Image (cartoon, rainbow, N blue to C red; front, side):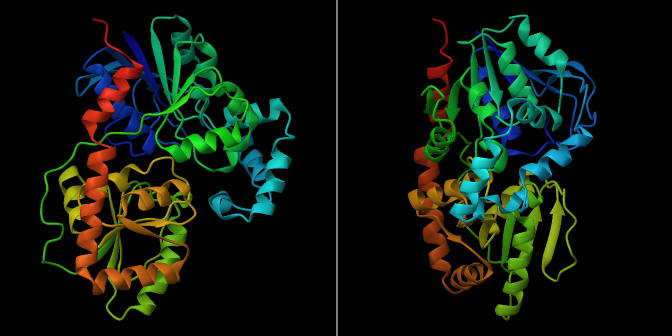
Length: 402
């Protein structure tokens, strides 16, 4: 079977949930099918400036074809985004009171279709040559990643019904409430990561045919080792994009409170792509990109992995930490993250700095608690997110001809 995997950015050094997920899926499917990744030349998800050369290449054994970005983020998009988020900032959306969110939903659903579509297209990247390649019909199946960008929105229109699949990475954010997304997603079969994502999909787009299924995700399970080394001072760890949408500003405020409340506070180490300037604060260590070996060590040795994002459809780094028997602390505003905690028993959810302080105090005072939560997390990942089981589920969707 000839399968195209379409994603807005792609590359070894590109961090992002959808991009990481696309890489995992493409490599699994390439073991059984003729797979090609179709993507843009962009490396940055805001400007969409060219980072890679257009054209075909082979990257770690995977065929990749990049297409030039005809238009990145349009100047008008910031105005439209401000209009969409009238009265609040985007990173606060998940915490809006119900009555405010109801007013918001009523307002944006009155947007004309043309305005909604211009919002989608103006955020970029526009890659007309990519969509022209899809229209040739050279692929038996096309798997798109993330609902949000024009690579999916325009790409779905270029692929006949019955050939299109989407892993939507849908979460409760303001743009998701634009009805045009639901109408475009109705052209595809939807492969969701969690039950919470399916529930949100049905709530936002009730007219979408019920063709969504949960296929989860898969990660390689590292060898079991001692959860923590005895050397070094305790630290909390954040891993991922260092961005306002990931709740980093809030996390820094919470950490300020923690340093005041705890006499010998743990440090807070952040690893990942820095898209947000951070203040100079004692104990706050921004490490940027680290290699896989260092990431593994930090995850194993952390007192807990803290994930402050209110917007998640899966939380890959959360699963990676649990696989390494590290407890987790998540934002209570994220339904998906809280669901992981409830189902796994591997962590806690917090609403504010005071609750982060309380959780940290307890982990410091009760080392056995961290070890217990870590063991539960490992068991949860083994049962729900093992790579081999994920491969079987993918091959149910994209069967191998015998």
